[in-house]
Amino acid sequence: MPYDPSAFPPFAVTVDLVVLTVRRHALCALAVRRGEQPFQGRWALPGGFVRSDEDLAQAAERELAEETGLCAHDPSAPAQGNGAHLEQLATYGDPKRDPRMRVVSVAHLALAPDLPAPKAGGDANSARWAPVEELLQQGGYGRDGEPVAPLAFDHAQILADGVERARSKIEYSSLATAFCPPEFTVGELRRVYEAVWGVALDPRNFHRKVTGTPGFLVPTGGTTTRQGGRPAQLFRAGGATLLNPPMLRPEV
Amino acid sequence: MPYDPSAFPPFAVTVDLVVLTVRRHALCALAVRRGEQPFQGRWALPGGFVRSDEDLAQAAERELAEETGLCAHDPSAPAQGNGAHLEQLATYGDPKRDPRMRVVSVAHLALAPDLPAPKAGGDANSARWAPVEELLQQGGYGRDGEPVAPLAFDHAQILADGVERARSKIEYSSLATAFCPPEFTVGELRRVYEAVWGVALDPRNFHRKVTGTPGFLVPTGGTTTRQGGRPAQLFRAGGATLLNPPMLRPEV
DNA sequence: AGTGCTTATCGTCAGGCAGACGACTATGAT
DNA sequence: ATCATAGTCGTCTGCCTGACGATAAGCACT
Image (cartoon, rainbow over all chains, first blue to last red; front, side, top):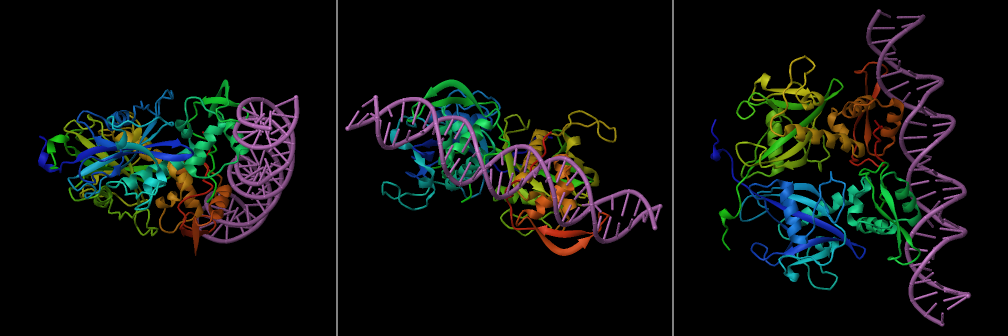
């Protein structure tokens, strides 16, 4: 039976990226400034068209590398390297989400350690890390007092979904280590949880929990004082991906 | 700036459905027999093209209604009615997943109470409920001894992902009630968990857990003996959607 | 050197929840 | 009447968590 192109409507397919990191005790996302219509000049999530010979995950990795230089690794590959965690988030296909044409966007979620400055085609003004609260408040005013325009398209919804995914997933998986450098201390890991959840955690109970969960952390033998205070043991992420029992997010 | 159709490759976008139910103590999925090439005569997940004016969720609801007659309700709407739970699962877009053309499939997961016979265009032979184990075993033999061909396309992977989503989601949400009729007993709900997880649960601890979780179950006042034995209280699903603390899936 | 500040790490204790399991209840079937 | 079946209520014990005291080991001062 020959294939009939008139049997289905054509779509454009894109990947959009929610790239999260923790900077200065705040959960931040990567935003790029749009250079074209529609939403010209507004902030948006990085993304682009899926190429005709690309898998969705490949397209997401390519976009991530283009925007941040990160080398995403598959969740099935345990090696952490300098790569970020990358996973599919959800797909958004409202017929009116892009006024130009019918676009279906497969959003991906990337978690990365704190990076230097983002690069976006060499233009320093066109990409930045912004606290997610700032990006998600609609029509308010940022920390510096200048008015904040909402994100382009439905990107505020996508970002909110990505943040919620990250918040819930660090409860029952070891994903929080993706926000940390290859070697990190228990305190640094705790500050990741505190930034992502927006709560304060008891350092003693947190230490007992993470060091007592088999396979979560493996000591490297080294210590560091980069956070000040008493030297802390350095750890790498262990092989365990699922935390059982999970880390409990405090109420309220 | 005018829109340039040559800037992106065209895709076909479909929705595929993983429709799960519990029948005779087994987790079953809806499968349809393909009438066309490729994979003609093989079993596949129900699905179809997204129309040009449709949202993805609308397309999934439409396909679900066409295949089962179920009226899916949004998860935000607490009313259960005769509707099924429907949520987006994941998106599959390998360039070679359909040999005819570039197709991106947005898979959805539907959970339904045990239904009568499936209808698929009136052809009784072209749709059936099959235990997921049977659909997922590649090239084995079914319970009736006849050889089992693997599902068409990448539908085995999609089904496996949907089953895993259902298995994990009933841990921390009240979603298991979507497998039950509007009124059900604690024992019936327990048999849902046992079928989905493939384990045996202690009836006394299960009863304590579900009746002790606020908002999970609300008694209707009625009783039933349809399962035999002592009459059991009937319940409806309560307003709570998240179970905290979650239901613990036994090891192994 | 000592003082104070910071962060890390170890310990203790009480409350809550889950697993194991005993006991009793209320139906229908034989 | 007896049995089988399923539902419901309790008890006990061990584990985990939250709250929090106490100590350790650096750095920045004086």
